Every structure is written in C-alpha cells, then in structure tokens.
Image 1: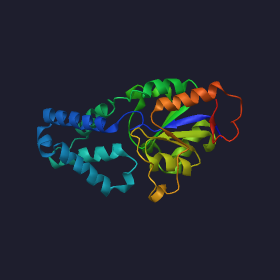
Image 2: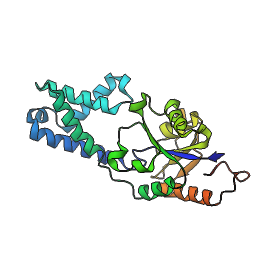
Image 3: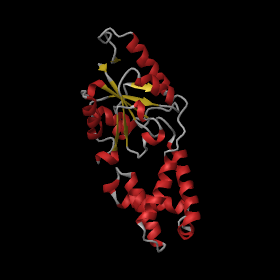
Image 4: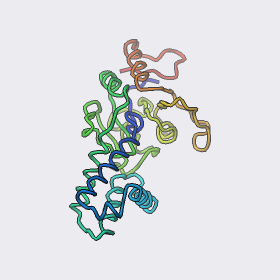
Length: 251
C-alpha cells in the first residue's frame, strides 16, 4: 500500500506531556498566590487537580475539550472564593496554557519532523490542547486537527477522516503515528488508515479488550526510525511497492 502522507499524535509522541502539565500547574499556582491568594489557599495544586477530574467526570459532553474543562475548573475555584470575574478566569487560564505549551521535545522529534516534512505532507491529530504555533512547530505541518476544534476525539474515525480529507487522500494512503495503542493504533486502523505504534519504552503490545486481534503496521522505538524508513523508501522510489511488502512510503 502506498503511503503518501503521515499524521502524528502530539502529547507523548513529540514530547512527554506530564512534565508540561506539572509545570503548568505550578505556574498557575504561583500566579494565584501572587494575584489571588485566597484562591491559592483554598485550591492548592492537588485540590485543583481533583476538581478538574470531578468536572471531567460530571461533564462527559466535554470529554473532547480539555480547554473547556480547565476553564470550568477555574471558574468554580474563583467563584467558590467569592470572585466572579471572567477576565481573571481568562488571565489564569492564559498563565496555565502558556506553561502547558512550554514543552521539552524528545531528542529525536525535531530532526525527524524536519526530515519528514521535506519528503511527505504532515498533519497532527491530537486529543489534547497543545498549540503547535506557540510551541514553534507549526511550520512542519500542513494542518492540525484537535478534538476540541472538531468536537470529537480519537479513537473516533471522524477525526482521522477529517485529516485525510484535508490532505485530499484516501485513508489507506495515510500513516498515523502515535504512542497510544487504543487511541492511535486501533483508532487509525478502524478509520482505514495505516498505523505505527511509537513504543519508546520497549513495552509489549497489549492484547486485551478492544486491542484483541489488533496489531500496528509498524512498531517504532523513536521518530528517527520513522524518518529513516521514509527517507529510504522515497530515495528508492520506483513507483510501486515491492512484492510482498505490507506497505511502502512513496511521495
């Protein structure tokens, strides 16, 4: 099968997400302590995290929208402390969001993106609310697709099909790469895309539940391996996949 474009997950694919979230929580806490000390005292980091989880559970209609969940969390925290100000909610969110996008890329990410974008179109597909423009990676991607903007999240086929439509390609000609077996691999395969599991930790492929009988087309230890495969395939392009090969990557 000819692969003509690549879609990439973001969190835990291009960067580890937990340090970014932890840094954002700390930045918000510091801002609250300086500007809204009563809120900071009533809602330390652990309490705000628990509140956000509670709101997430209470609002399944917002499961695809982490920004809306965070804003609701901040509104509740401020109002419970006697502060009813949407302007302050937005200021607090901006502090959080700025730090949430202060990510530390995996060492292989930027070289791989540079190499990949020179050979095939790239799009991003993410359930998170990272902002590639703020991070400084937008130039590598033809388009970005987030669960929040589309109103649907991986593993829904709709978010994958939106990316394929933007690329002008049938799903079978797009390779999706991500770290999550269910959201990225099973989701992409059910939408008709090819799939690559980014297995940085060297773990075993899970075989239970929704993943029973599902396997990725590729298993990668880092994005450099993906870039090497694509560069090798495009350099050796003959216009057709070699006989017996599960798929190949061609421009």
